[in-house]
Length: 523
Image (cartoon, rainbow, N blue to C red; front, side):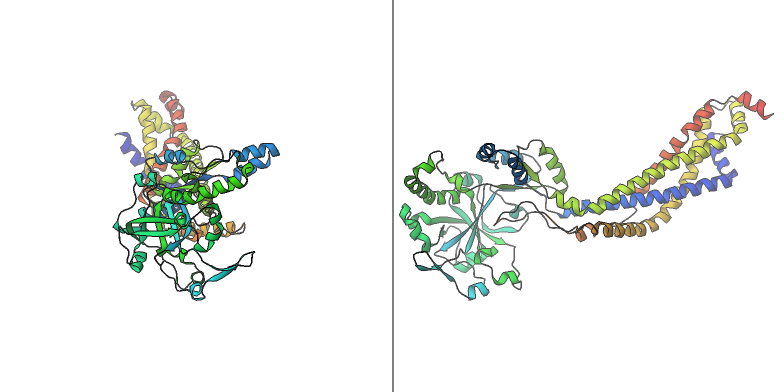
């Protein structure tokens, strides 16, 4: 008779002991299922939420860190620190772009400018219907105030996050290429509604004014002419902007035309830099001639100096790669620079889930350790009652390893029965228990302040917040305790592991048995 057959017979022969052990494994299994179910639901909720978030990270100056650093310096050291003020450089951006996980990058500059020779798409809101305004200068001159009516959005690269996300869709023509970006070609894309409103087509040239004509009186003294304020752009593409305004909102009533998505024009960054340079260099030379002492150490402006870069936003290929991307490049950051993935907000909102994961893992470990201790003690104690059986088996030539294997199989059979029953009951209980502990945890966390306070990084005027705005309700909506086949497999693996470890100490005891001594003592 082999050890496996003997194990089955012993399980059925000692029914009361087998039932007691099965109940023990049943209770252990239920607790483990609840713990694993809650932990899996919490982790899965975070993964599901991450996957719904835009996979973006921003690279920018860590102003808080720099400010704290400067505060501790003396006045002379502070002046030196400000001379070496940290900044975002194109070399740093291109280095991050070389990562294969990067799909595209936005290094945007947004400027509110004036249409010339064409009309921007009207909003027909309260602001426009109430007419414009007037401005009175110190000399008593009153002029009509002309508000900017369009938004010029420029990028340093021939792609945009909005294009990848289908917020912008090119319907005719093309987007500008890298050569046009590097050379600052005077090209642009306009929206389909702006094109339709003015009967514009690809190949047409539009004129944008950098300043209002009414303000020319303050620039003429420096030699600036109307030609200098004109920015002539060739239309190379027409796109549809899927961003829409809510006409019923209070904000819409007082919006300016440049707030309308239909009046957003896209162009290479240096196109604006080159255009403004023609006006800016004259202002610089005029001011330098008037006050030369203030310009001794100053650098002559360049087209690039009018397209100041303060942030780069990278779109990655997968939201789940965001954390690893940040970790991989953290060590390469220069002083007072940071890569922000909006993790502070996400971690704050996920705090209840993290707490549940921690406690559920602790429960599983405590249950597993206690199970090992209990089963080890039970097995060791029962060896005394089975010494004669062991002695007989040893005397007829059964190896000690086979006897240990028999004990192992006996426990495995009982454990499988107990865990199988626990899978059925635990699946029903885990969902309710998971909901109860989550509700309790959220109520506890809310006592320490709102969990929906968000900090989506440093947002400058005129910039777009590319971080997906989430609330705790969005995150917790993904929390659902389900007992998956993977969890069931983990239960059985854990059970086998508990039995294996539990049989180690009794196996050492069996190895010390002497069959002759055992049988003589029995007689």
